[in-house]
Image (cartoon, helix red, strand yellow):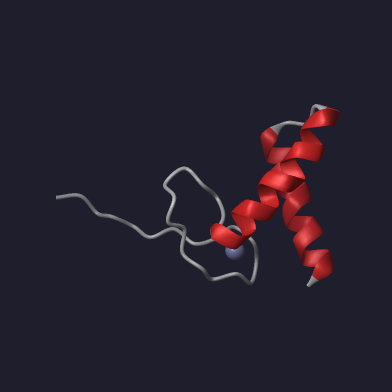
Length: 62
Ligand SMILES: [Zn+2]
């Protein structure tokens, strides 16, 4: 039997569930992350750095 574990959004303080399997964020933050990534990718950063930068960015705003 498979243990289907629900994942939660990686943004601290956000307790929303992730519905898309490959995603790290909930629907709302996933959309914001994609926009953030578009700009961040131009500076050729690794994905993990982009994720950390995005989380710091969200924390700053809230
Ligand atoms: Zn979220």
